[in-house]
Image 1 (cartoon, rainbow, N blue to C red):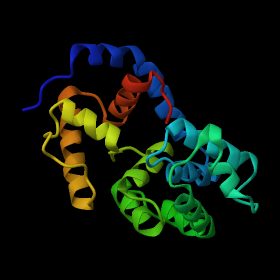
Image 2 (cartoon, rainbow, N blue to C red; image 1 turned 45 degrees about the horizontal axis):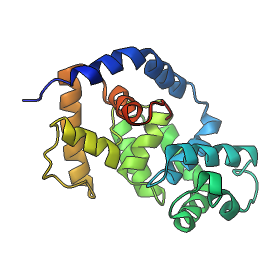
Image 3 (cartoon, one colour; image 1 turned 120 degrees about the horizontal axis):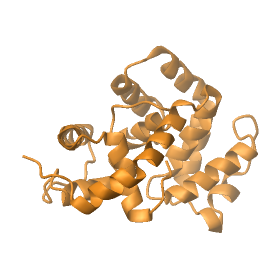
Image 4 (spheres, helix red, strand yellow; image 1 turned 60 degrees about the horizontal axis):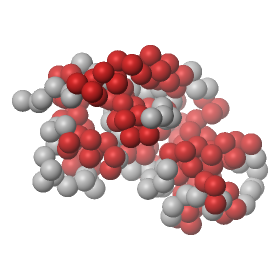
Length: 209
């Protein structure tokens, strides 16, 4: 049996819920031609501050990276928006750009969000279940959880996941924790998508993406 959310966290959620819902609605209105840059953002986020990945996304948009050859190293290595493991992520970005038509085909032909995540994680270099879930959430899809180290710690602190449980590094482990999170979400009547924003806001006092 799960325990309820702590009262201070629940109070915080009710205060920021309108902002969260506004942000989730904005994701549903992201145009298809913008999906390329949302995927760039999600490729940059692992082990990197979301604010830095967002700055890189904006720079890539300003330089029309999808259409142009640009010096990615200068961008992802910038001091004001440093992206960790930048050499590897440059390769991921370049590969994704070359093969983005495959991503477009997947998004046009698959409706089910779970199947979408599965196919994206198989087809895009550098996309695990976590990054694929993040990308899908950022283009308005619901029903999959973004399990990063931050959300994982929150789930442990709330008793959803045992402290003995290790951070998921396999598909099956990810799915087990996702299922527990979904059950907890139903228990407290807060969607997984909303709770993800609540965790992030509790740490940073910002609502980003």
